[in-house]
Amino acid sequence: MSSSTAATVLMVNLDNGVSESLAREMKWRRIESLERSISPVAQSLIRFSYGEILYATHNFSEGRVLGRVALSCVFRGRVGILRTAVAIKRLDKEDKESSKAFCRELMIASSLHSPNVVPLVGFCIHPEEGFFLVYKYVSGGSLERHLHGRKKGVKGCSPLPWSVRYKVAIGIAEAVAYLHNGTERCVAHRDIKPSNILLSSKKIPKLCDFGLATWTSAPSVPFLCKTVKGTFGYLAPEYFQHGKVSDKTDVYAFGVVLLELIIGRKPIETKRPPGEENLVLWAKPFLQKGKGAIEELLDPQLKCSLRFSNQIGRLIEAAAACVSNEESRRPGINEIIAILKGEEEPVYSKTKKTSFLGMDV
Ligand SMILES: Nc1ncnc2c1ncn2[C@@H]1O[C@H](COP(=O)(O)OP(=O)(O)O)[C@@H](O)[C@H]1O
Ligand SMILES: [Mg+2]
Image 1 (cartoon, protein in one colour):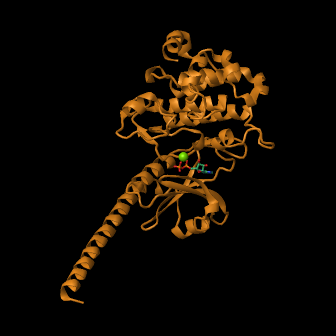
Image 2: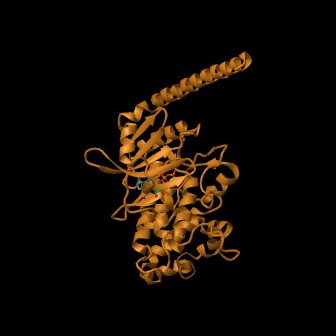
């Protein structure tokens, strides 16, 4: 080996050594800062070791995967002496933003305590393996699977009955009302959709996935964000076009979920005939007829549910109000709950119904 080659090798090694130790130092600093940020709530959660996470998920076995998207993967597992069932969300360790995403989801999810929100039980931070959030396991599957995952017409695959759909509508509306008005700070979920709604064994709906959730200063006080995150088909026009986030962003997305419950179709179905691909656009002309639109709108698998026509009519009316294009005309979630429960004549239907429906639907 010539001396120049040896010198080159030495230089490369030295350089690697410096950048590696710098990277390690940076990583520790990030973790220290993360620990400081979560310290106000860390005591109220269980801190799991990485060994416990590995044991719980059988080394992240494929058979335990509950859901996988770009930057996270959720595994089913059991923890503790009682072998409590949990869902463990692993954030992508290569993602530079994962510590921030972990911190935000942990801080928000740990502040929420409602029968219709999936509780966060603990977490794990490992310098090499990354960040893990441990939620209570909800055993009945996601609304996405119940509504859209079955093969229609196959024996043994009965459609989600109307009574459960109505219960989901009320339960998730109450979860959203809790996020917006029931805690110290208003939380906008920003990703309300059927795959983020889970059903318990007793068919109680629970909202999950606080990965995009954010605090806003108060309900109806919007702020502008630079990057629009969420799911196509559920994005309110003012959010999609201008990045404007508020509680009304969730009200719009909730309205799309209501349409899915009523009609039994996904918000975007590209294989449908022209004019029918976009559920909101297709449904809007019918929505203004309220109960009178049951014939056109109701999921064909639910025709035997016509005895619930009052409830179905109220869901149609609530969906119409939620998917209003104009944010200022879209009611807050408490008004939507009143419509869903048929508790009172909503303010807008007494005073502004004509213009609300006429201009906007
Ligand atoms: N607590 C839970 N109990 C049961 N299944 C869950 C739970 N949390 C998530 N899942 C399943 O994993 C999927 C993805 O979880 P989610 O929290 O939405 O993460 P992501 O950010 O990957 O969308 C959900 O659609 C659901 O099927
Ligand atoms: Mg999700």
